Length: 364
Image (cartoon, rainbow, N blue to C red):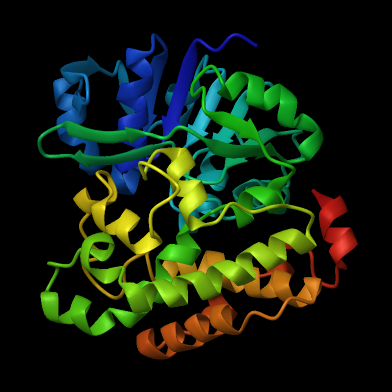
C-alpha cells in the first residue's frame, strides 16, 4: 500500500502536531475533531494550518481539511490515525466504525490502552462486522505541545522508537509497512498485550504524582513532575511498579524495556547510563513539560483506570503479585473518592473474563 493521505482524528496536542508534521513529509493530511470540541480548532481552521516550531526552525504548514465531518476527514485516506486519550476510544469508535472502509488502515497513535480490542468490541456492540485493519502503538510519536489560540505547535521530539502491533497479530507486518511510511522508528511488537505493557505512563505518572499530591494542590497549577516531583524516594515507588510490570511481561513471554531503556530509545533521555532521577530531572524534553496541574489530571485518572487496573488483572491471571500497583490504585481512589477498580479497564470489560494466561496470549 502506498500512503498518500492520512486522516488525523483528534484535535489535541498530538493530533494537531501529526497533521502538520506529516504534511511536511509530503503527505496530504486532514484534521478531525468531534463536533462538541471542534471550537478548539477554530483558529487553525481560520488560518488554514498552524505554525510548526521544531529543531529545524519555524514553518507555517497548511492543512487543507480541518473538519468535524468524519466522512470528509477520511475520504481517500489510506491511513486513519486516531490520536486520542484512552477514555475517548469508544466515542471515536462510534463515529468511525460505521464509515471506515475495510481497506483503510486504522492506526491508534497514543498511550496504549487496549484501543484496538476496545474499538472492535464497540463496533461489534453496534452490529458492525467489518474486518478492520487496526493497529496500535505503545505511546505517542511526539513530545509536543499545541497552542490553539495561536495556531502554533512546539515540537520538541519526534520519537525514535515505538512498538506497534495489529489486532489480530497476523496483520502486524502488513499494517506496520503502511505506518512506516509515516514514522520510520516503528518496530513490530509481539502482540497487543506486548504493546499495552510497554506503555510507560502507568509506571511513571500515578505513583510519583500521588506522593506529590499535596505539592500539586498547593502549587495551584505551578508544578513540574519531571523536574521536581521525580526524586530519590518517588523513584523508589516508580521502580517498584516497574518491577511488577516487567514480571507480568515476562510471564506473557516478553522482555519489557525498563524506564531508562524505553525513554532513552525513544529519544527522551540522552543515554542509558545515568541515574533515572537525574535523567528525568535533566531531560531536555521532559523538563519542558509542566504539570500535572491538578490531582484530577490524566496522570492520575487515566493512567490508573486504563493502565494499572488492567495490569493488576493481568498479574492475577499470570500469578504475579502486584502490591505496589494495588497500593496506588487503592490510595489514588481514596484520594479522589473514586472506585478505580469498578470504573477502570478490566479483562471482564475487554471480553476476556475467565481466560487463562495461555488463552489471553492466544486471543490476540
